[in-house]
Length: 270
Image 1: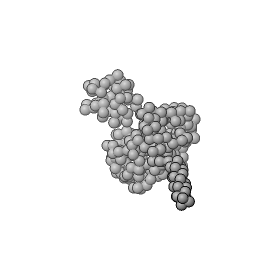
Image 2: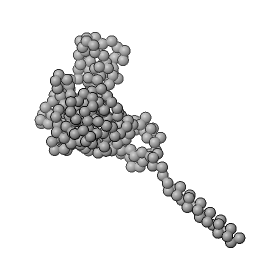
Image 3: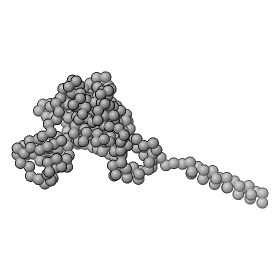
Image 4: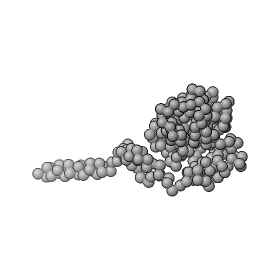
């Protein structure tokens, strides 16, 4: 009888320990840390946030300028090509010389909207940061993140390379606001590896361009907001050339995706 009671007590204690362990166990694989949120959320909640666009409100109390003032360096190196017209083509970012395999970092918290090969960009990562801000990281030799992933400022997202239309290993880096590319040197002082203090004093990149260009931070003029249709053009070709979307072109010009363009027709692109 005594032995039976001891066995029963042992089983009871074993079950109590097991229940305690179960209560303490958390399947962290099902949790996701979202930039701007204090506590992790489930994968299902993450999907809901993404679909509802709620992630764009994480920094809702800050202006785009204040957000830009918190950005970090995507990589370190010498600028070998600047924003502006280059060999008759518009170059929409800066090229930072980096050895193949050097780590590329997320400029700020956000969601990866693209991690794939994309025409002249080669291997490309695009991160959406909220406030209609996006950063582009092109010519990568390798991806370290996948589309849909949430990343933190300073998190490794890829390795430098020369994929796509590139003649040397480097990082092609762009900043967009409302689908319009702006000169990254308006935000970054690449020579000293820091963000310009002026960035936090403005509402958005358009205002920053107006404020800083006269000070000599950028020698490039503003992008043309008009485009004259040429022979062989299509909405897709124009959207790729202007770094905007077909939907945006249609909205600005009261067009549909099946509209036939006329040579000489003037389109608003931004």
